[in-house]
Image (cartoon, each protein chain N blue to C red):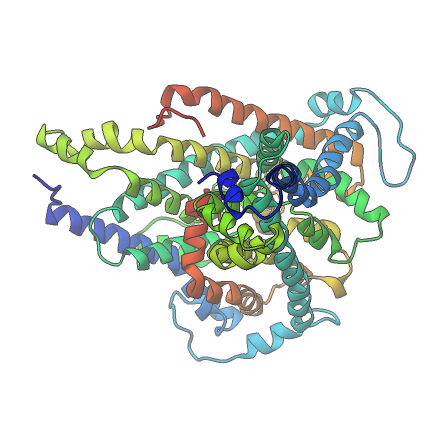
Length: 282
Length: 315
């Protein structure tokens, strides 16, 4: 038996490409980190990565933002927007996925195909009637346009992901639970949720990331500055001053994505498993 | 094991009663569980989908009463609106640069990581991180700063003697700068490729090497055919995404200079939410949808010629 042998020279070239590529990939973020400690002049004048001195002025000044609202407000708003959206998504999508994965019912194939086809429905096609609908309901300038669709499982990605995951869980478990007297809901809550945990986590993390970064929907649905999430808050500080204080912008930009970076490093496994089981994109 | 058999064994209620109750339960429980989605689908997806189609034949704006104007919106788009034509060609150009670029790097790095290299997880983390952050306003702001005329990118290429490039101000280059930001986020496609590469049975390569096939030959005869389903999937999802991009072009260049980055998403936003021409914007969204549908169909149709399914079954 011959195993494939990789020539060492080829492997060395691979390492060089990988390290160099990785460096190029990371460099913008590293540079961003150090830029937050530089003065505005230094950002443009100096090629050096490290700042002349570490001062936190940009953070202090940037945090105060423009106008009457500070970044505390934008952070709190983002959390108020993201938390219920993520929780609702995970619960509703898992319940729906359970229905699709574990039961047969009339016209199930059609429903499932319909659900999958909405994966390809572009947001831009439905945004205008949605805006008008939410306007009529008086939901603009609130986070309901994000939370309510999440409550009703309007995220086919996650449904599909959890269906795929549930297909790998033996149905004998459900049957045993049912014979022991669990009803369908109890089976889901007591037996399947503990097993589904990685999939729930993946879905939650992806939804967190998407909602956290979401700019387009926030721009459409929210126009009061006091309701702005981080994405809109950053944009007004970017647009407001004619001579932009880039060190402050970078400081706030970095802070706004820092939670995502931290979560990513701790929960990377769930991101990778999530996209590998369902093929959704990050 | 058959459920009926298990029920038979428990044998407490009369069998027939239990069975019929169970069958009714079996028949409709699933429907109860998917009800939230059915409601959500009807309210937030199907209704807006149909409504925008109807709006696209009206002169609807927020202020006045809408009236039907037939195909006027579409006629205007394709005959009188130079911005629209511009944004269509910009969007296609953008997708043509971005999607192949992204998939190329994703596949390249996935192939390198699929060898017996150490620290695969570390590399994967580094390459994947940009796709987590890239869609944010924060990264768009960073991009804008880095690619300014006196920015860090020009300083770097100055080291190797390349003259400064006007990354954001030149109509010929700005679109490439925006595309680079998307290409930088190839990590999620890469993770998919890597997972697919790991699925390829190793004995295929063993017999290929036995017969003296070169590495390049092995790639084109084994590796690539085996991962075509994932290439196909990535191609479709990335194309749909590319045609809808908004944030980076809106933040970094605001569609300029000279509308050279005026993607169709920006056009839609301007007409719908700045000018409040909801009917007109709906027509734009439907042209966009038709384009996405066409691309998807073309990729689907062509797939039988180049996508190889191991078990002979499409997904």
